[in-house]
Image (cartoon, rainbow, N blue to C red; front, top):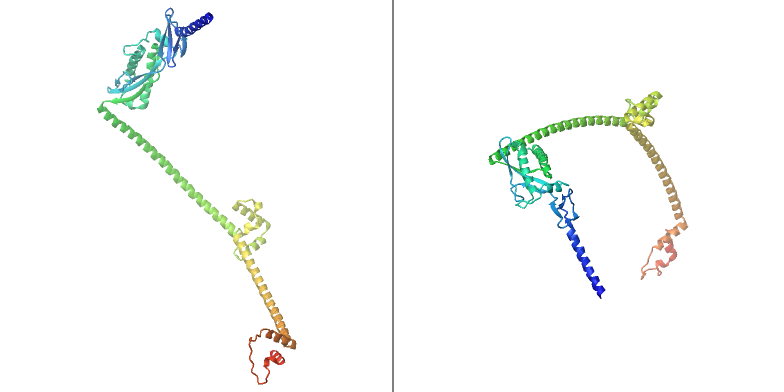
Amino acid sequence: MNNLVQLAKWVVILAIVAWIVPAACTSAVGPNDIGVRQSATSGVLDEDLGPGWHLRIIGVHKLILLPSSYFMLDFTTDEMGPQKPLEIRTKDNNTVELDVSVPVRIKPGEAHALVQAGNHVADPDGRFRYMRLAEETATSVLREQMAALDSEGFYSTDRRLAAEQGALEALNKQLAPMHLEAQAVLVRAVRFRDEYEKQLQQIQLNEQNKLLDAATQKLATAQQALDNYQQGTNAQVAQHTQDWAKRQAELARAYQVGLVQGEDEAPGAARKRLAALAASDVSALHDQAAKVFGMDAASVSDAYVIGIKNIQAETLEYKSRVRAESDAIEARLAAEGNALVARVQGDYENKLNALLGSPAGRAYVAWEAAENVKFSDVLSFSSADGIPSVLRLRQFAEAFMGK
């Protein structure tokens, strides 16, 4: 039992030691802070402490925390800071009011030097001393640098930006001994006296009108160049159109009429004239056709030289001639066929009449006639001979046979 009590005591003692020792010997630096350790024996450590846990012995070390982020010097009318807008007299003796923002921070790695200089202490207004010194320095430098501009320089973007860059360089030169640096000098607003504001607006309007006139002149020049280009293009189009129309006409004439010249336009006359030419003349016509049609001379045949119209005329003449001959043959054969049919039909009718005139033929006719005779179902006879005529079959059959 005593052993358990002793063990519990040691566990409690170790827990207390594990909690007290880190709390008494270490301290934390936040992610937005810079730590500077000051020793009661050796003074300020020549090194900045980054975020994390660092050694600090109570009674021996003191850990000073400074912000690592930028703080803003806002020389504006808003409530972002204690600063007020800067009133500057320009080079041309005009008064201008500027809204300026300057982001400033402690230079990386030099927080310990700032502490050594004693500028880390808090002023009565709650700010660090180095912040007040930075404001005073910035006010002095900005008044000096921005006063180098005349009134026109403030509304000229290029000149104003150049002045801002010059002020930034001069300010950083003044802030370097304080171990501070400015990121930028941002002129956010420029205000003149009301009378001058009206004049300035008119001046700016005149400047804009000058730019507008220059742009209009450039537009007119570009439009003139465009019009000239369009006119030149239209002229070239018209020229090429005429050339192509002429080329099409030449090709159409060459394709339709051919290259064999002659006064006789009868079908086949061009082919006869070509056949009558010498081989050298025919070859010259083939070369001419190849040049006109843009072909290889070896691919040019007599058809290209004769022309479509002449070939069509030959085709039409051949078609008409062959059709006339075929129509004549058709008429002759039709007449011969009709005559043969008439002769055969006559022979047939003669033989048929001869057969029908014979006793057997008459009997056949009588049989065909009797086939179509139909007596009434009820017959009444009145005859002086006593026997109805229809019952006298021999006489009745001879009557049908025409006897």
